Image (cartoon, rainbow, N blue to C red; front, side):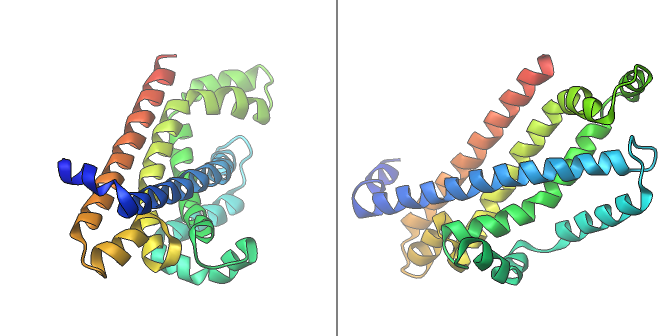
Length: 224
C-alpha cells in the first residue's frame, strides 16, 4: 500500500481529506435527519395499521402508499426533481450542504419501513399486557415498542447509512461534492486512476466501519 500512502501526501492528499470529510458530513447529517423523521413515520404506520393501537385504515393506506412511492423513485431523479425545494431550504441547489436535503428525503421512506418491520417483531403479548394494565399508546411506544425493537432499529440505521454512502457518491457526480465528485473530476475526467482507486478504498472503509459499529451496537443492546 505504498502507493496509497504516497497519494495521501501533498495536494492530492488534501483533496482526498476534504472530500472524505464532505462525504462523512453529508452521510451523518442526512442519516440523523432520516432517522428522526423516519422513526416518527414508521411508528405512525404501526399505530394506524389495521388492529393497531390507534387504528386508522384510510390514513394507514395513504401513508403506506406514500412510503412505497418514496422508495420507488431513483435517487438521481429525486435529487433533480426536488432542486427547487432544496434551494428553498439551503439557498442553493449544488454543493455538499444542498446534497443533504435529497439524501435525507430519499432515506426517510426506507427508515419508516424498516422501523415498521422492526416494531412488528415486538411480542404482541407484551403489548397486550401493557394495554390491560392501562398504559397509554404513548407509554407503549416509549417503554415497549422502541426499547424492544432497538437492536433491529440500530441494524436498520447502519444499513441506511451504508445506502447513503452510495447515494452520496451519486450526489457528488452531479455537483454534490465529496468523494463522488473527486472521483469523477480527477479520477475520470483527468484520468488519474490512482485518485479513483483511493476514493473507492476510502468508501469501502466507510462502509465497513458503518457496518462494524452497527453490528456492535445492535449486539450490545440485544444482550441487554
